[in-house]
Length: 88
Image (tube, rainbow, N blue to C red; front, side, top):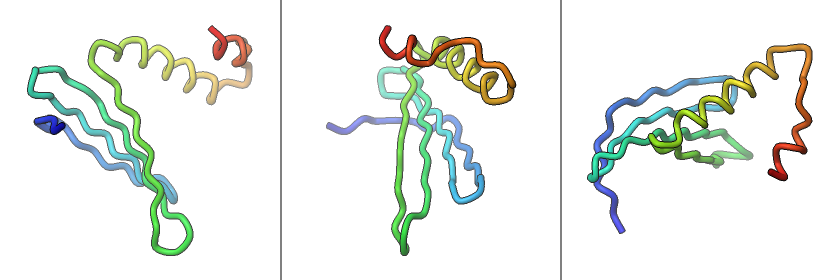
Protein backbone atom coordinates (compact mmCIF):
# COMPACT_ATOMS: atom_id res chain seq x y z
CA UNK A 1 0.00 0.00 0.00
CA UNK A 2 1.41 3.38 -0.96
CA UNK A 3 0.55 6.47 1.05
CA UNK A 4 0.50 9.64 -1.01
CA UNK A 5 2.02 12.29 1.17
CA UNK A 6 2.94 15.93 0.89
CA UNK A 7 5.92 17.12 2.96
CA UNK A 8 5.04 20.38 4.72
CA UNK A 9 8.16 20.83 6.85
CA UNK A 10 11.53 19.13 7.24
CA UNK A 11 14.36 19.80 9.69
CA UNK A 12 17.65 17.92 10.19
CA UNK A 13 19.46 18.22 13.54
CA UNK A 14 23.01 16.97 14.04
CA UNK A 15 23.57 16.06 17.70
CA UNK A 16 26.85 14.33 18.41
CA UNK A 17 26.91 10.92 16.77
CA UNK A 18 23.19 11.07 15.97
CA UNK A 19 21.11 12.84 13.36
CA UNK A 20 17.46 13.60 14.06
CA UNK A 21 14.98 14.32 11.29
CA UNK A 22 11.69 16.08 12.00
CA UNK A 23 9.25 15.86 9.11
CA UNK A 24 5.65 17.09 9.02
CA UNK A 25 3.64 15.55 6.23
CA UNK A 26 0.08 15.54 5.01
CA UNK A 27 -1.54 12.30 3.87
CA UNK A 28 -3.84 12.17 0.87
CA UNK A 29 -6.86 12.35 3.22
CA UNK A 30 -5.57 15.67 4.66
CA UNK A 31 -4.37 14.23 7.99
CA UNK A 32 -1.14 15.80 9.20
CA UNK A 33 1.49 13.82 11.07
CA UNK A 34 4.95 14.24 12.50
CA UNK A 35 7.70 11.72 11.82
CA UNK A 36 10.77 11.79 14.05
CA UNK A 37 13.68 9.72 12.74
CA UNK A 38 16.93 9.02 14.53
CA UNK A 39 19.94 7.82 12.60
CA UNK A 40 23.26 6.86 14.11
CA UNK A 41 26.36 5.23 12.75
CA UNK A 42 27.12 1.81 14.15
CA UNK A 43 30.19 -0.32 13.48
CA UNK A 44 31.75 0.22 10.08
CA UNK A 45 29.68 2.08 7.54
CA UNK A 46 26.27 0.85 8.67
CA UNK A 47 23.56 2.99 10.26
CA UNK A 48 20.82 2.23 12.74
CA UNK A 49 17.46 3.95 12.19
CA UNK A 50 14.50 4.42 14.52
CA UNK A 51 11.21 6.13 13.76
CA UNK A 52 8.27 7.54 15.69
CA UNK A 53 5.10 8.78 14.03
CA UNK A 54 2.74 11.14 15.83
CA UNK A 55 -0.61 11.89 14.22
CA UNK A 56 -2.25 15.29 14.52
CA UNK A 57 -5.08 14.05 16.75
CA UNK A 58 -2.53 12.66 19.26
CA UNK A 59 -0.19 15.65 19.22
CA UNK A 60 -1.51 17.38 22.36
CA UNK A 61 -1.07 14.26 24.54
CA UNK A 62 2.33 13.55 22.96
CA UNK A 63 3.51 17.08 23.75
CA UNK A 64 2.27 16.80 27.35
CA UNK A 65 4.33 13.65 27.83
CA UNK A 66 7.35 15.10 26.05
CA UNK A 67 7.19 18.26 28.16
CA UNK A 68 7.09 16.20 31.37
CA UNK A 69 10.05 14.11 30.20
CA UNK A 70 12.11 17.20 29.31
CA UNK A 71 11.28 18.78 32.67
CA UNK A 72 12.39 15.58 34.44
CA UNK A 73 15.68 15.61 32.53
CA UNK A 74 16.40 19.22 33.46
CA UNK A 75 15.13 19.08 37.03
CA UNK A 76 16.95 17.72 40.04
CA UNK A 77 13.74 16.32 41.56
CA UNK A 78 11.66 13.63 39.87
CA UNK A 79 8.28 13.31 41.58
CA UNK A 80 6.61 10.42 39.76
CA UNK A 81 7.51 6.72 39.73
CA UNK A 82 7.98 5.76 36.04
CA UNK A 83 6.88 2.16 36.72
CA UNK A 84 3.42 3.40 37.77
CA UNK A 85 2.90 5.02 34.35
CA UNK A 86 3.95 1.94 32.34
CA UNK A 87 1.33 -0.35 33.87
CA UNK A 88 -1.54 2.08 33.29
